[in-house]
Image (tube, rainbow, N blue to C red; front, side, top):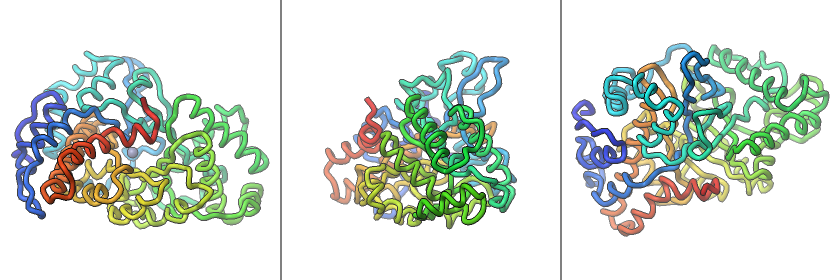
Length: 430
Ligand SMILES: [Zn+2]
């Protein structure tokens, strides 16, 4: 079925219209009796220059320069093999078509032709105005006018010996990377090594790092903690955290939880959102049960954190139904990235419809564009996710319109909210 998709013409925006109105998948009969995306809704969705809530763009580098490796703090491209979802395999129709649509037969020629403007050229092809770039650092080729920085906070949670936390080969790959990032944060903070007390650490390393990130243009801090531990974040007393920090013994999780809450609180003070990976993740050892969004409910319900905006990145998949009631918390937001990489537009549309029927002001488009493999770069991944996400949104809104749940005007308004306006309001983008 996917191989039968009509070839999409080169401009991503126009392609989105073509694909949402003519692909076999769009015209297949759906459970609720609706068919293709309503043409006016498809047209509006294709027209909107999106804000991408979460992605990992690769910084273009000049010939002879070290290739960019700062697109993720915990890259998943060097883990033990797992059984990849069908859509992400190198020979899948999605991957092959995305490469063809973006580059024809010659990706290297596009890289050469656009040089330092390459990343913004890719954004234009994806129909994306501003991409939130979840990266260790920014740099030339990722201009602030198009890429808003989201740095990583996890490393700050692990100031002790992390050897006892390593339970499988993926942990073995990840913890040294976060330890390396923490050393970088020490150096950037002008601190020679681990301070003697937790108070000093929080002030001179953690707060200093967050303030530096904010000053450099960050709009949020990102947690990949679901790759390292459960999202069950307790609320230990300061005395317990002090003791663990000072002695290196006792309940390390309590110290991590205390630091997490300190960071969240500081993010609220600085006007940074808190991004948390809430979903299944890469690597065959990923603990799916530990990424259940309901584990975050005590955090979202903490009165002292009510003004901190938490964004549940990837929408909790496979626990998407659990996300729905969490959207009533005033400090909870969601995006639907990753789902658009792993699953079909129809599947994503069913998730989206439930959220849009509930609290649509909190739902945001995102691609999670990521350099997965040689064949599936951040560009191809971004195109697949952008097209799937637009099609899914169109299908959800068309279903709601045809069931008389919403008016046509409201459908068009919801499209603008999800693709752009909700994120612009949350991050105060111009
Ligand atoms: Zn990501």
